[in-house]
Amino acid sequence: MTKTKMIIDCDTGVDDALAIAYILADPQIEVLGITATYGNIDLHSAARNSLSILELFHREDVGVYKGAEHAYDKTSYVRGNKSPLIHGENGIGNVDLGSPKKQPNKENAVDFIIDSAKRYKEDLHLVFVGPLTDLADCIRKDLEAMKLCGDITIMGGALTVKGNKSVYAEANICSDPSAAKEVFASPLHLSVIPLDATLKTLFKVSDIRSWKDLGFAGRSLYEIARFYYVHELGGEETGGAMHDPLAAYASKDPSIITNWFPCNLTVEENGRTIGSFEELNLKEKRHRVALDVDAKRFSDDYISSVSELIKRS
Ligand code: BDR
Ligand code: CA
Image (cartoon, rainbow, N blue to C red; front, side, top):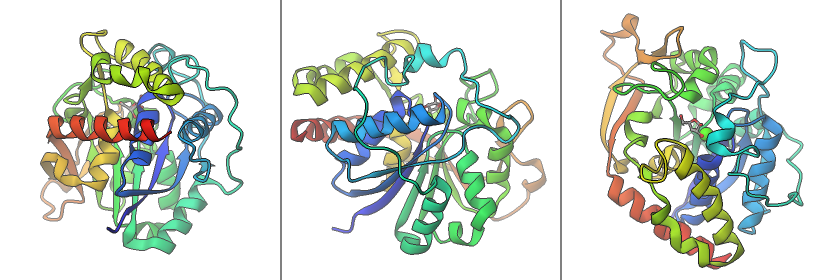
């Protein structure tokens, strides 16, 4: 079996942590590294959270590489006031995993991604589940290398539903609209997983309750996820959306998306993702946008593979 070689760029956050758990769990995925960005929390805490999740599953062999500290149009990072309520003060549901033993790698995220693109070419799948500053930086630095990648998937945007940051805007795109606009205007072909699909993947506490009794790793991941499932949307009965895990899953297996809409995206001033009017008549569409998902298959696969990972840890 040829494994999908994957790098994920995270602003680690709870659903980011759940995406990391998933890519470690899936036997068809080889995790090459995790790059860190600001977003749900500051860059340094995001990197630390990723290191802690790797340690929880005894995968200290996977490196963590730091990327951008703030958005293009800002001079520093300011945490959104909803973020601690959804992801906890520490970004991982206020669960204390202690200080990770390892430090982030010396190489920065952009160089690590570009070097990997040159090395693995079409075998490399890149998944971006935070603001798009790191991806825009990679494009600015070496577009030709980025064109070699087999797949680039991003979690972001809202096409047919309202946003989660404002009525127009989704959080990842809205955190750095200038970077997102550059990314969408670039010649790269992208798979885009917006709220339209991710809001159909709501998990509840009851879906993961069995993890609680599966030792330290299970109990910790259960507590991390529980915080988010209770606080992200309408409370425990509504559950929380598996935004970032769905993006990682779709990069490995695009057939989980049951409706891909081809278009050329752009970003408006207010952070809204929308089809570019200037490119309306262009035959070639660079982006495919996920509008529907086989939520049952995703949820069954996610829970069974992460449960196996927990049992092994
Ligand atoms: C996205 O924003 C972040 O809060 C989540 O981690 C996810 O990547 C959802 O809009
Ligand atoms: Ca994220």
